[in-house]
Length: 131
Image (cartoon, rainbow, N blue to C red):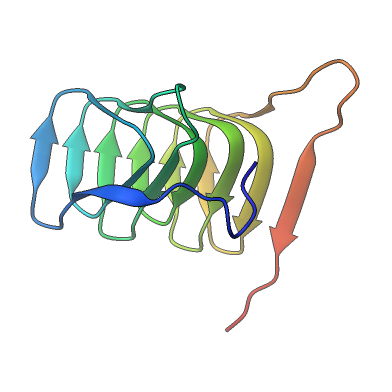
């Protein structure tokens, strides 16, 4: 679903220095560089990608197909397809994922819960430190 050529375009931005108080839903792609106090949901009507940069803070639930986190999330994270945790990622809450890529330095204070069917095994990829 998410090979390099087929990812949805990032069409929305919450810029650094901005703050949103309330729930935010989107289609296609969203990049968060600012602060959100509320839930962020990628609507399931089409594939969605959510990027939470190292300058971003989210206080609420995060849900999308493909999620890339390098900032702070205080709340549960639900990646319907793929979750990438970059080195500066900080999550305080439970994480539900189908596939997980976690870089050295990322921290999760909560449960890691793979979303599986009966026949599937969890996909876990530990990324090497490329410094």
